[in-house]
Length: 209
Image: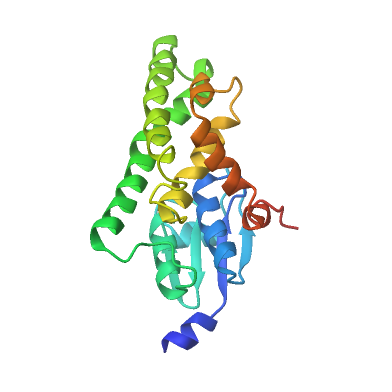
């Protein structure tokens, strides 16, 4: 299939509205103005179609014509390549590597601590909750240090680094009680508010059906 025909093929996203990983994909599509349909999955009862397409039965899954993709960062990079305007990956290889490092940090270091803080004593010991609280001070400081220098994680323009990280910062900001490190994270909060205020994010969070 030619590249032009591929672009015209229908896109379907198997998603769960509140899942931060699925938000990454829907937000990218809305930012690029690419039409797509959504299959809203039930979090604890995924459809047979999803289970057939994803070996771990998770959202998101993207179907583009006859292509099936899973893992949100793989999907967003694919979308950025096939729909290059606006571009969310830098031109230089070293800068692209830094975007991927932000994604790795978010997926494997930041997100687990957000989960530990979010679920708190209902699932964890007091010591584990205290440790998650301590580590999140460090993680938000890392973000604050960068965002006090540049409007976005990679500089003056939004990139996949921002698209991948912000849903989890948003998730943390909504936990009750709010993490105390936000009181020292004015640049992080400004960055988060700017992204959340984008019309594309409003569209991302619209309920389906």
